[in-house]
Image (cartoon, rainbow, N blue to C red; front, side, top):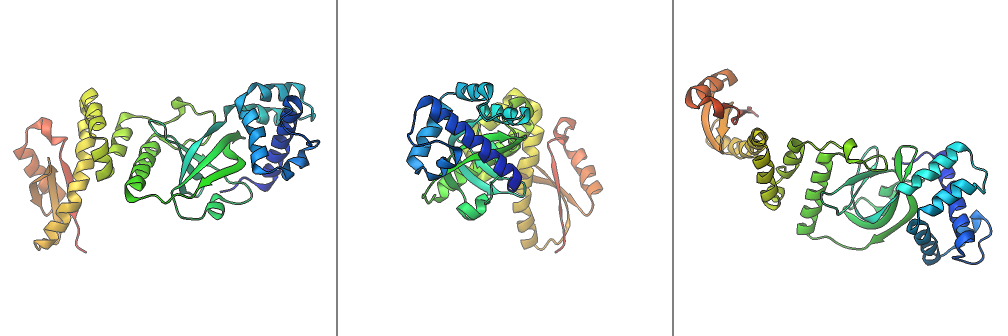
Length: 294
């Protein structure tokens, strides 16, 4: 998804006015007299100007206060929000319907839903993901965009790195994709149950986050129900294959600790057997699954 064209024009008008103001005030480059001159800059000089901007958010406050371009109050508010920029190295990990996902390398990782400008990120970068980029993310009318500059790295990631990146994305997604700036942890879903489900999603993640998994459960034993549910799904996939290989076409089955303890033609039958075998406190740890005829 891209920012509407009218908003793209507004962004660049405001952003270039801000950069020209900073150059006039800080004397970074020579020969800049109007915002349109910024289009002539080479990448190195443009980076110098942006480094000065992001090196001191006070310059944004000064621009808004002086208001050399006679901006409206709404336009001033837009520029003011840019103090909440996020400048980092990211992995572009997904092109989704509403945005492209930029993943940072913090702990826990954070995923930002970012809109493209006139050209979508998929058109710019291609479909082959992940891609590593240096970028600056900016708020714009309750959305997240970038400042018009992306530095991509021509790196081919091996299987191990890809698994690690995908694992980080799963963790970030379990907390919620950030779609507005500034980022506030209070706005992000961070229940321990969701974090645990993220850790348990893949075999790789379960191995990497073994200690974190049991630390969460140790702090909150009620999460054992979530653990058994997710691990039950994993074992069920294996058992479904083995049951079909044994000639069983359909039925219901109950699992606990990776072991089938009951089976039958109906769910009620399996639940009745299960309850007759287990103490009451263990019932909630059982995972019941259905084998359907193909």
